[in-house]
Length: 329
Image (cartoon, rainbow, N blue to C red):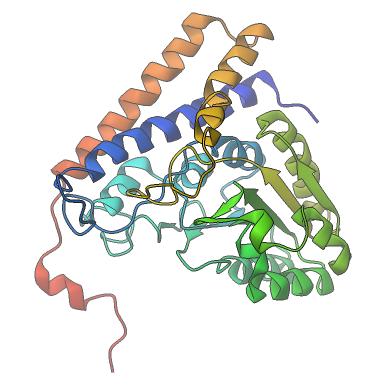
């Protein structure tokens, strides 16, 4: 299963949009946070987790999804939200805590929710696995179209919620795909120091489902394997587990000193930046010429700048709004 020309260009476009979006967020996040870093300061307070470097995972999977399909994501969600079609302006406003945001500014960047495209994420590790199974079960019980994809990190596979969801998905033969983004670091703890098996795809056998491992952050290999898994789910054949070797080009969060990384690791990762690599492949394969890709990149930047300006220009909710949309005794 190979992506069409249109799918390849879509994948590249969304990778670039994600990267430019996060580059913009990174600069704005640091406003007001120097000379002494305090995450409470600036127009974007709180923690910020960037996904730059992991863009191939999002586009390779989401290229096969429709609005009817469900995605649950992690605390590092921007690339997946963009690839799933979440409204970029409203997502930017949500990150800024503005009233025009997806949830009126209440959720911030770790709790992006867009019911129009069936996307949700959470800052709780492995939290999306159960809801993905629930969404898949609802589709199956109602005989409605749609599969669920649960994205999680390689550290999350050591949580009980992941194993419970895997077992339930297999027992009920649910149309769900578990996608593990293996960036090798659970905050500051290496995968080798936290996980008993070298590859998490082998865990699939314990639950009677197929398991796949994809090396080298390759968007084309991700597209192929994810396509097979999603097609299998649509056909009623049950769940699949996929682990993808990817990497983050930033720290676990903004302000992370990254002292845990071995010397030279990060420089080596930048040499494997997936966006320049995909551009080179698109040119070499004749999918597009340089002018065509330049236009995609310029349009992506313009779209991001428009979204960021929308967020900056939007109003904060009035103070009394803090007591709305919550449960009360």
